[in-house]
Length: 192
Ligand code: HEC
Ligand code: HEC
Image (cartoon, rainbow, N blue to C red):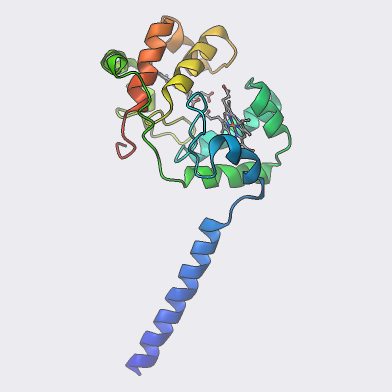
């Protein structure tokens, strides 16, 4: 009796294990069109481009919809997102959010300390260690330094708009932006 019960339990456990591994390993159909630049594991092939690995799922979804609608401007990504359905976007966001987070650590080490000193202002929204609580907001920890600096410049020039970032970038010059990028790129992923 005991053996039958154990056997049944093992079978049920196996069925669940196979089911969940299939669910989490099913690559989104559209992933092939992203992998050349962002990798299928979310590690971008160029340090000027954003890593997507372990980024917040809701944030990724919001950004892909913003590229699709034209609310966020980037010639490459506006083109890429135009072809995506809501279902594609949801699948891609789930996929990339599930990949293990990275430490990019490609910032200029001499700038890291300056960035750390300037990051006090960022903590309130992006978290003490670059990972905000809100799933709608981006994790900065481990993001590529050059990409972070470029986005800060974009918020300042108006190329990219979000009401909460407008005041943040007002007083940042290019050196400060580079320092903040250097700092956040080396914050380890384990820090929540
Ligand atoms: C030819 C290279 C290229 C391809 C292909 C590409 N991307 Fe991008 N992606 C970029 C670049 C460059 C940026 C930064 C754009 C900017 O400055 O707004 C970006 C930005 C993003 C962002 C914003 C990240 C953030 O932190 O805000 C997301 C999300 C994204 N891409 C997802 C995708 C997905 C999903 C695909 C496939 C459907 C894809 N990309 C295909 C180059 C690419
Ligand atoms: C009042 C809240 C708030 C503060 C303070 C704040 N941010 Fe943000 N930040 C946001 C929100 C919200 C977004 C998402 C914008 C969007 O959806 O386009 C964002 C986006 C960003 C992005 C884009 C990330 C990506 O993946 O594309 C960067 C880089 C960034 N912030 C850096 C900083 C830095 C550095 C500081 C401190 C100097 C800072 N932020 C302070 C709320 C804040």
